[in-house]
Amino acid sequence: MAGGGWRDEAEDGDEWEDDLDSYQLEKRMNDRRRAKSLPASFFEEDIPANGEGRKRVKFADSIGLNLASVKHFNTLEDPQVPTKVLSRLNSYPQHQQDLLGVGELFQSALTMDRLVRCFPQPAESSGFETRVRDQRVCLEKITITQFDVRGQIRVGATFPNQEVGVRYTFNDWLSHVDAQAQALAADPQRPALVGERFTFTMYTPPFLDPSSSVSFAVYLQCDEGVFWDNNEGKNYTLKHHCFPSCAAPYVSAAFHAT
Image (cartoon, rainbow, N blue to C red; front, side):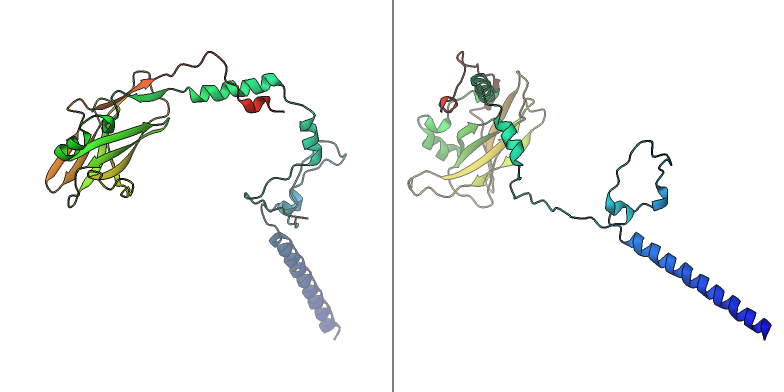
């Protein structure tokens, strides 16, 4: 009996140790499961016993704890600037010379290098409507910005399976780009307008070499063939031009407002 009782006590002890190990394992797994970003073991912390040494900062969720509060930012919301920050900013009033500097920077932005056309606007020339009928496709006008060139093409009539566009080059036709034009709605103010209008866009590099130029021609491709308007064989050309700055500094009237 004594031997049997000893075995029972030993078995009870083993079961108690197994329960303790299971409890500790489950507790540790629960603690690890709470981590939301980069779990780190508590035993990895290496802090000198004397309290000296380099301090380290850890986020609560990196050691398996929950964050006290979480702030979600919305890009549509205006930022909330603390009052003390605004008051400190207002303690430094703007000076007139600072405002003049802003005006000069604005002026320099307006006088950047651009492309300029080396031909008159075709629609302003005499006999343009006749050219549209004879050539079937003609460049009408263009506008130039810092980043692109936009234009309109006039087609004499509507053809089946037609494609209207512009072909342009930056390297004297060593290579070229074709850009398809899109049809424009009819202008109710000009019912007698000859032909159909199309619009196109040519994208240009923002910074061009002083010797840069762009040559282009517009085309109509249909079942009857391919028709071109290349400025009577000379191509339409845009050249780089640097607009000179005005001698007097630019100052907006708003800068003098009180």
